[in-house]
Length: 337
Image 1 (tube, helix red, strand yellow):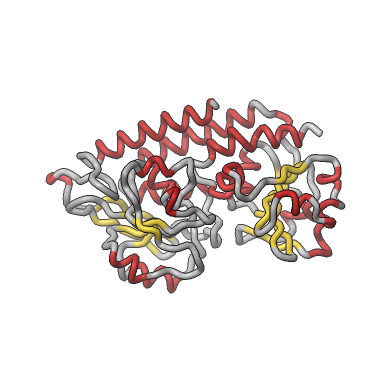
Image 2: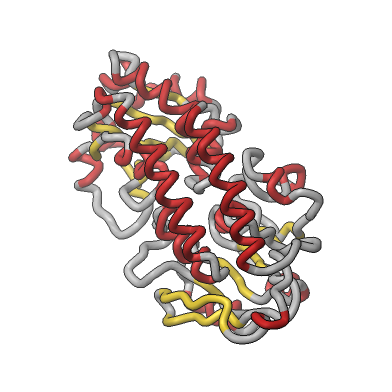
């Protein structure tokens, strides 16, 4: 529970700092209204893969639309409540389009839900009249960027970032810079890294063991690669990538594993996250069941609907404490076998 307590304390402090920095109390969605003396000029400047983006300081409440994977949670951690949220991971209006660990930070604000399918409704986004659009952890499509930029300054990941491969610290940095809260973002990153380091230190058996973050979907298999939060948190805890998975390539967040090459998923520890299957169905999969890592009980099969699984996939500064509380003990049990 230490990590959860530290995160709650940090979020409260960051929120207070954000409100003070923007001078006033939040009214409805968005962050607080700036004072008249600070109502002009730039709120924030961010270097992105599509060039430098300058976010003008609004005259009233800051209206943020969060489209990228976990972008809304990064904004919430900084005390900023988006007016519109693209709901990833099947999150619904019941949790305001974000993970249940984050929804309470909206308070009484109800953001507009912007879908969760494959396409964006540009008219719906434009109707929210945003001051800035966050699409930091996304597919990096340039045409999408151009269309969004016609609506408002749009923030993507830095140059060199692969599609959906923005690590959580880089994502929070980009979001915090765009919102004029770079110092608060740096503080959150520092505290979160300290929490992860404490979990790693408490589990020295993780160090140097190979780990795979695997998925099963349809008739296919795959593994999350460095740059994706589902592998990166394992690396931060001390695990290393299994060589056979590393050899599958990089440049994206995910590598497809053919039926003939399922043995590449064997490692000292596996986290199995099914897509479209239950944990029991995945555990019963004959190809996965043939792997020593499964046969010897060194696999953590996640229920895809559980808080543990969704927090693990969200990889936000707000979901990481859930992972440290809930997944780390399961990893410790698997690594001990």
